[in-house]
Length: 159
Image 1 (cartoon, one colour):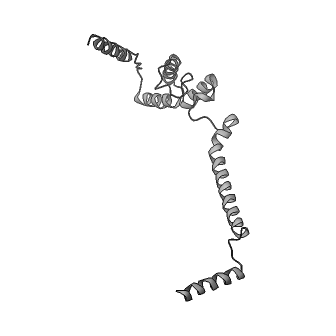
Image 2 (tube, helix red, strand yellow):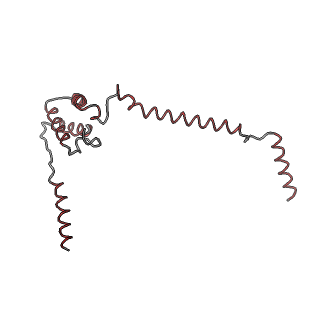
Image 3 (cartoon, rainbow, N blue to C red):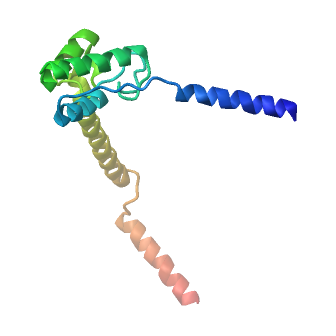
């Protein structure tokens, strides 16, 4: 029973550590800036975590980026200026929706190219099935059809 209490106390302390995590709050001069902050922080990827945006990441670099984002918004920078600055400093990877051009052309065109390739494979497959259907003897000659008809007539007479 004593070990169970010690184990339970350890679990409670471990979970309480999450509650002590730093929660950042920034004062914005207008509600529009706060909305832009939320939108941009969800659009920018954490360079360390790589699968989280900076709004959800607890990594120190994400905290720095959120602070920098707040400073740039309050300084009057536009969304494009902020995204360009972040991309220039951390690479295009920092954006969830990278710009179209240069190294990202294949990234943007890949879904379309894959769709066209799938349609091409489907058409080739259907065409080859149609061609092999005639070539493998599935179409009966007149002699074969006559023979089948004779066999059918014979079975009808026998019954």
